[in-house]
Length: 238
Image (cartoon, rainbow, N blue to C red; front, side, top):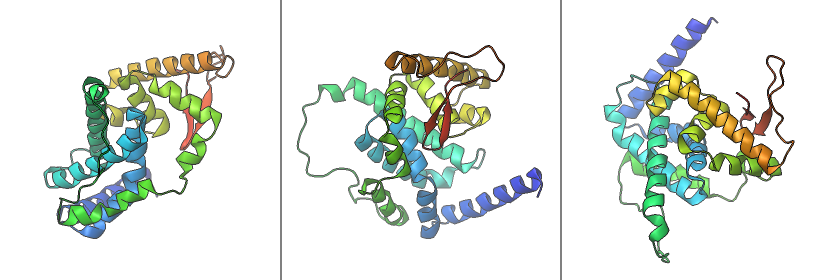
């Protein structure tokens, strides 16, 4: 099947799913969560660097998706739209943390997360989100046990947010430059610039944490250093 035919089939499938979502079909919402909750969680976790906050943020992302579905006009793909919401939610939470949370006095709250106040399809469909809290190890968690994963995550967390988000979207989530520009609401040139700067900064931090871990780019064309991730490899050279 040609690429054009494959693309047409994907668009037709997404149009069908969107119709079901807009109609409030509970099965469609359950499918949406099963399809995207892990990737959304991974994205917001790498922005927030806090597992508990990432779970709450992921839940809020899906609530906003459900509430905004009727206004989604299909100008971008469903995935691009959801990732844009996730980036905004995580970025807003991170900014709020640095402004307010550090000054708070911890309290023993009686509840956490979903309050159960929402009703209807969104309430029923959000139930699977709780699987994020289960005790079984996900592929990401198993990879996180390695020292390499720990160093990579630590180095990523030290990058400025706009560099970290771009590196994660490109090198870990496999997004195209065009998709990243759309998700982050910036230009293609800005995306490419942030990616080069982010990769350079990431490599520098990894080299500082363990000299020799990430080699300097060789003079030969195409030479690059890579690090294993949960979704494949991360290229850390420009």
